[in-house]
Length: 383
Image 1 (cartoon, rainbow, N blue to C red):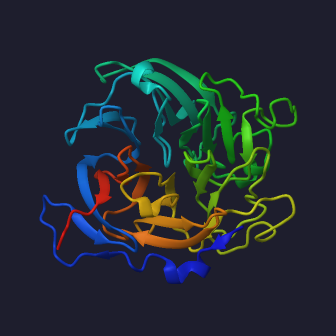
Image 2: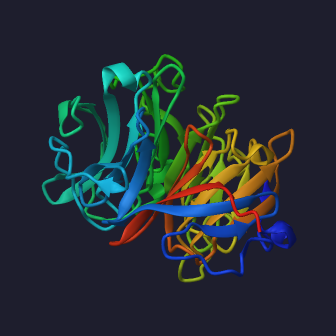
Image 3: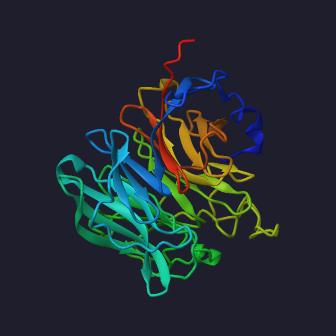
């Protein structure tokens, strides 16, 4: 069941207020929210368009930068770029995108990267596997597992975050690459959620594995630009967040073989103001779990499952570039979104990534050429 942003305006984050007492330069910023007091610390700043963060087993952080650098942040200092990262194509929204650690990373040191790569003058999205050296300075045994089948000279809608299932398989999204009709072409990787094994092979449960009319890697189609993807650790539910056009940003729960409508149905309009497709619903196309109008430009999604904020258990967290906020979405027992709270609006700049850390804190990456890694934790302010 869809839940509209407009129906939830009354509950949409109006209680997120900065505590009046100004924080010292070296102190965390304190905030009050609907259900918890929180504080935000800057772990490191000065990052160049950071895109993704992961927590390493020793508590350090690994961060990608859009220009191609993969770094480790330890003791509030960013390392030199890790060597051995494959060459990326830095164009428009494309570059080095997501990083995801393989299950058992502690022993295998295996990780996955999504990135834009070039083929002549054209670009497309690829997935690469590599092994991090024991000293953390180099990436070895790199192998390209997947590359999309149609490159273009356009610089938008590459996707592409990675979610890893309990079986180690990879789910990731690719946008329509600025050519909207590609999202309905079953012989095109664009505008889709894809599913591959950790060695690049096709999983047995893929809906089109033996269908010659569609690509075997496809999981679902009709996605405009799914930049966020996660799997709820409590129930294995796959969730994506994706950019709409002028309005129509969506959260979806992609099911195998389903079509999520773009550009046939959408809650948004063209940037010119013109209508897109046939309307907001049509037979054969799935409805979003939730949508925003106007757009918030969502960059990432995670599910809160942690000990630090038990009152947020099961909430969805969505990083937003427009309005510079973190959206916290409450769900009822059926999974329907019933309330939205907007946190930190305008406080830290455009928020590119959100990740729930093993200790229950929430990590945020801010966008831009002076990007920062932030840590949101329970407030220690007793005043």
